[in-house]
Image (cartoon, rainbow, N blue to C red; front, side, top):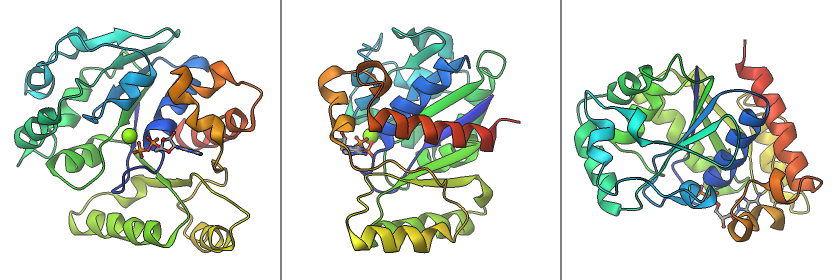
Length: 247
Ligand SMILES: Nc1ncnc2c1ncn2[C@@H]1O[C@H](COP(=O)(O)OP(=O)(O)O)[C@@H](O)[C@H]1O
Ligand SMILES: [Mg+2]
């Protein structure tokens, strides 16, 4: 089982859009896939038209003897299941509180899924917290979508520093560009500069309105616009990621 956490310190960078599409593509490739929407905003849950069973269940999901089986829901798609977010802001506080001083809590909880799934994708909330630290410990790959702007470089460096400071395995950190606009010199220059870092996948997701249309269709792009450039971009990125992580 490979756990991939879509994470960035920043919000609005394409974590959810990427999580929804990459998990879908993994499942389509025949991998048994679980998507865990840990962000209280519940956008992934919204895109997959899922209603979490119990709005107050978050505590039972992250307690030491958590039983995830109960929370896992089917999606419309084969090989793809989901743990939805209950859309309660309070859930985030509960998760952070439960995980304080328990760096490996989430890792322990995910262990029970090891035999069931090939991939677990986690859609993370932004920011640093006891929850993000747990995610960094639990994930095999911390996958960061990065918009090629100056501020993004800054937050990227902050995440790398955080990994050093907390003695986390920084080889887990892998990145790709999202919302890239190659007509902009700045985007080109920043991409060229960061590609030297060797932490970036070559394939990137351009700024494309078909990605935004996921909100209207409430489906992964591959479902409503399979011949679009956006769908192709995510397919190419997925192929590269898969080749990088599957032994
Ligand atoms: N490649 C893209 N091109 C255009 N819009 C995008 C792209 N990726 C994401 N978006 C839009 O940007 C907004 C933020 O994306 P989202 O995936 O929700 O970010 P995050 O989960 O990091 O907060 C959404 O409205 C989404 O539709
Ligand atoms: Mg999101």
